[in-house]
Length: 255
Image (cartoon, rainbow, N blue to C red):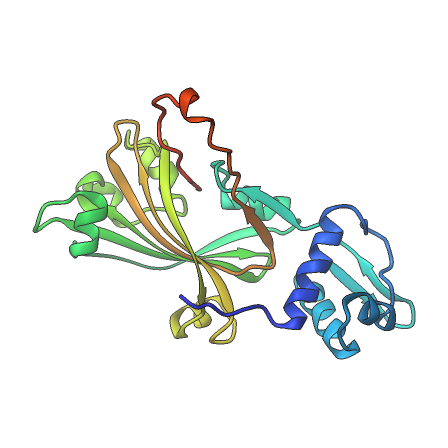
């Protein structure tokens, strides 16, 4: 984890993303030129150009030679308290989703597996390493761990692209989950799989998913790029003490 603050170009990118998301600029609109934007954001033209370039690379802007820079797509935002599939999220952002399974292997459960998945010593887990794509661009790199005891022998050779679907067919369907989110910098493995430079900011998920009985059935470690879709956390105000009643814990989940 790092306390890194965004640089000026990233701040320009984020502010432009907000202006597009809130309707200040709509699809088809031409953005002010770099001189006007440098005054608006109090930064240099080169910084504005770098911020524009990040959104052009992500598909939200397009530059027409001699005419200017135009909005081509609105960034999508998704609430973290809703169980929305990555396939749907990528489609909603205007891209074609796909997935590549890098590896699948069975290993002894380590201390972390035993704690997260409530496994006994000597248990084994299946690790599935995958990358999700938006068009041809990798956007999510994941390492998912499923207790081997949940998976029948016939299904162990190929768990398929959707572990949620598999668990559903095995009567261990995911009903809720808890996730820890951290801002991190891309290390060598994440940079290689997501095709980004080492040190690029990523959003990291450490999540455990549970079935209807509250049994942990899946532990996931995920690294997300930050410029294809946004994730938002909905928060509720705490009611006055005299109104507080016992309630189920909130959870954050994803598919």
